[in-house]
Structures are given as C-alpha cells and as structure tokens.
Image (cartoon, rainbow, N blue to C red):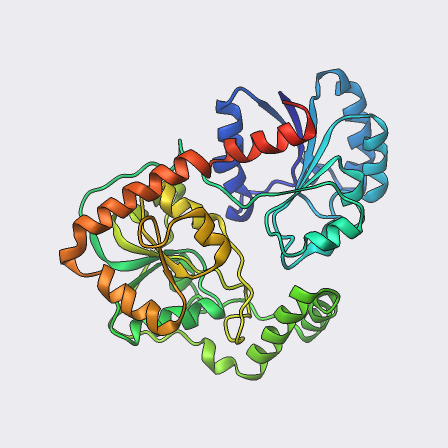
Length: 367
C-alpha cells in the first residue's frame, strides 16, 4: 500500500518516535510512506495551497491519505479539497483525550478517525465521525529484550514534570531506589518544566472547560497552581539521576531494571481524588523491551496485560510501595524474569503497530 502522510516533521523526540515505531513497522510489512512536510514550505499557508496540487499529480499512485497533525497545520478548506479527490483517508488523534478540539473541524472529513483514548469518543461521534479506538503500540523489531546484569531499582525514561514528581517522591521517601533518565536534570533549571504564562494558562483552562475530561484536567491545573510546593523533586539518597536514553539503548535499560515505572495519570490530575489516566508509548515499550512495568491500576490497562503475570498494577499509594518493595527483592529474580518474558510475548502478539494498522486498514476497506 502507498501511504501519503501529511507529517509536520522536526528532529524532536516528540515526532521522531513515529519513524522508529510506525514508519519502520509499516515499511517492514511492505507498505511505502510518502511524507509531505508542511514545514518544508515557506509558510503553512503555502503548504496548504500546494498539498492538493501534489496529491492531484500523484493521485493514481496513492492508496491512503493519512494525517495526525492538528488544524494549525492542515486547514479544513484544504481537507475539503482532498476529500473531493476520493482518496481513502485516515486521521490519527494521538492526543484526543485532553485535546480533542484540535481536530474538530477536519475530523468529519476523514473516512476514519483513529482515537487512542476512548473517553472523548462521544464528542467525535457528535461531530459525525466514523471511529476506531486503539491505544498506542510498540515496534517489536526495534525494541528487543537485551538482558545482562539486573538493576535493582525502578527505572523511568522521560521528562519528569508536575504529577510525575509526586509519584517518584512517594517511592524514594519510602526507601525505594528510583533511577530517572533525562538530560533535563543536568541542564539549567534542573529538569523543571516550563511554566505557562498567565495568558497561556487562561487559554488552556478555557479550552479544557468545554468537555468533561478537560474540566478535570483544569481542576488539577488550578490545584497545582495554588499548591506548587508539592511538585518539587526530593533529591534524597534513593534517587539516581542519569542522562537521557537514545532509542537504541532503551531495550537494555527496560530489560535490566528490576521494575520500570509506568505513569498513566494525565498531567495535572495526579492530585485529584480520581485522576484522569492516559496510556502512553512507554505503556507498550516497556513490555516489548522485556521489562516489568509497575503502574497504577487502570481497567483499560488491566485488559491489555494480566496483573501479577505480565505487569504489576497498584490500586493505592500504599500498594504501590508494598508491591515495589516485594518485586525489587533480589530473591524474586526468577519471578521477575518469568513475568518479563510473558509481557514481551503478549506485546509481540497483540500490541504491535502492525496489528493496530491492519485493524484500521480493514475497517477502511483498503486491505
């Protein structure tokens, strides 16, 4: 299949993960991906003018038009022209849980909308979209178990901001060694997240107030603004800070940590009585790498991996601490390895991008 992908690509990790995860798997399956990068044009307006021209020239060789970019890159008027060409189209909404409105104008113009979170599905249905719900996945060819010397700590790869700090503090303050991998800790500011201006905060809160999940995020944002002291990282002797891990080394890190931290609470909602949960890339990267994930109990996540066999799920802070202490014991090395291998097998069979895209292609009728 020849896929024409509207992709505002930069060198940042926030976008390059798609090449490591999605592009690689699709190409291994025999598909080709033609990227149209609007950022390669002088302006976004020029890119939107040229997109229909390019598509019309290549129409006979295109099997699918795909996009994940929001309305600031792909205009509604441009998508209306694309739709008239009759090319099957797929919109992937990676952030539909907390930012559904970035796709509101264009979503109904796509033949299929792929949501990675189910909670805002009623909104998209109201907008007249045909929907398929599927979470993230992981590339089984890029992330391969690489076991050597086990590391008796909880590892976490990624940016540590707001609510995530609270989770790490809870662990280290209970004497549980936690290792964090991020260059941000060694840069000026010590890993603190960039604070939004008052105008940016008000704009964010206004947009969030328009839907139920957003209102919970807004409540958490306000609470964090009022009580920011709770978001300071406690640099005690049980905390280890290391530099960021490139994709090539992720498998070894996740494979060899006795436990890897899965954080699903959506930003700014950790401090709520009932946080909003969102599954991330690492939810599937950890088991695909042969790692053992410890995470908050989420019913959706419990449906993807079996608690106590392929993952460690916790329903309270107390359980998080007690289970972490239990699974980190050196004497439980055989148990951990058995669970890691089962997690990899489950991920490889059910949670690859190939599985996800085949489901989308079949629903679209292009496979």
